[in-house]
Image (spheres, rainbow, N blue to C red):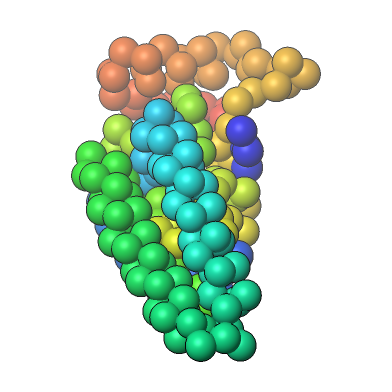
Length: 205
């Protein structure tokens, strides 16, 4: 799984239209670098969407190949119509599946990049963080994959450089200071932590 800068609404993506995360809704209660955080679908739903999209794309490729092969024949117009109809049906079916997967609160990106004429349509991050959740949905990061109704997968290409989300590798050290322990205990218990000073960490007098 990717790990890296946290993704937010208006962060850049790989597909050109639009070139940033658009739509949503993003997180209503979590701001990262003063911008609302982006939320993915649950990982099991994401895997199912990836499988469904691959099957859908394979069917579209067959229809597209048939239309291309028949382009110079009398059956060319009918084959092209069949290919475009298949794309439209795929957008409708995958769009419905994406909406259902996002119903729990995931953010939905709206991609208008053509493929080659039909827009990619709605899309969601399918491989967000397995252990960091925002409003009960996986937090999204630089490098995460956006599966859209049609077309190749999109990618988050930038996030907040000062907020890193991901698994801690075995080579990372754990801060064992009393201050760090107090923050961890407060986070685990849900207890408010009030600094009464003096505090070397934050400078509170």
